[in-house]
Amino acid sequence: MHNSSQPQSSAMTKLLPLMLCFFAMGFVDLVGIASNYVKADLGLTDSQANIFPSLVFFWFLIFSVPTGMLMNRIGQRNTVLLSLIVTAVSLLLPVFGDSYTLMLLSFSLLGIGNALMQTSLNPLLSNIVRGEQLASSLTFGQFVKAIASFLAPYIAMWGATQSIPEFGMGWRVLFPVYMIIAVLAILWLSGTTIKEAKEDGQPSTFKECLALLGKPFILLSFIGIMCHVGIDVGTNTTAPKILIERLDMSLDAAAFATSLYFIFRTLGCLLGSVILRHLSPRTFFAISVACMLAAMVGLFFFHDKALIYVCIALIGFGNSNIFPIIFAQAMLAMPHKRNEVSGLMIMGLFGGTVFPLAMGVASDAIGQIGAVAVMTIGVIYLFTYLPRIRINK
Image (cartoon, rainbow, N blue to C red; front, top):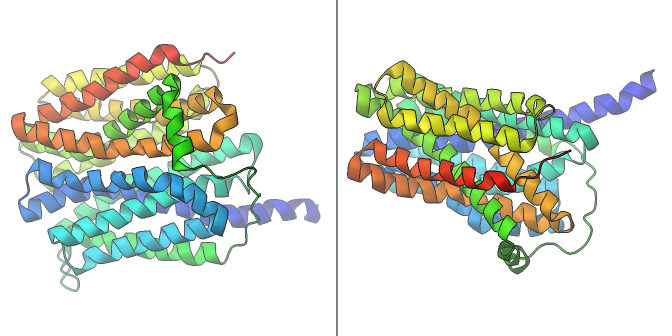
């Protein structure tokens, strides 16, 4: 009896530090609420403030494929450790102030660290759990990541409404709090030994990855991922601004909208794995996109706080399972090119750069309704992707 429980307890001791790494992966989502506070502190326009989330996701375009090549050289665990070190440094910088240049540097490093982590953490997890358990572990990892995402606005709000003379940092207390957790993750993972499976074949190159965009379905899937992330980052950033613009709420009160979005995205992640056992991916995808479209229509017209909250919750639930469905469809379409397809889909997170920039320009021109219009284009695109989804028998 003792012997059989030994491997299980050993797997658990390796799993726990990885779950703390998933929590650290969620730090990237603090950029939504942080950009709103930086905008208020420095008196920026929407276009200037939206450069911050755009910058974070720009690095996915540059670093996702090279990270795959780096993992072949230094290993997955060391790549995750490197990502955590870069993340910790990014969180240290705002302790020294919130000048525009310093925050640009901080968010750049946060994006680079997250690009490294997103590409390397999932493969590292697959060395500990396999088969059916891997899917549930990845889903649970996304759930843990989402906890960090929706805690960020609360910590920022707490800091902004407290007087902390020792630090004098206000909302920026969020950064050292998360930095301490990142350092703990570094120490825990560096003390954990994980045997890594050797990769077959040659690592992907930029040329091999980009060549796959010539396949129509892969290109459509890539754009679908861009839309998913654009809507995700866009809602995260714009939800508080809608409440401030229409209901004259303070930023501290409006910051709850970002948390509400992540709460429903988290619930969607947990429910999605159960729902997909009973519904085909196409049907569930249709329901998810319909939820988002209804919410976008509502955000065009509603000026009632409760109704705006319902719309934000619908986007959170609707957008929670778009990524795994598109990702799985792309992998199924080209099972012999999994590394290249995986690298491309992670590159699609670059949508988090394109959408906020467009939304910033649109909202400066005609108010937050312009930002909603940009996100609605992304939702409509996802409807056009719907007929191409395979129905699993």
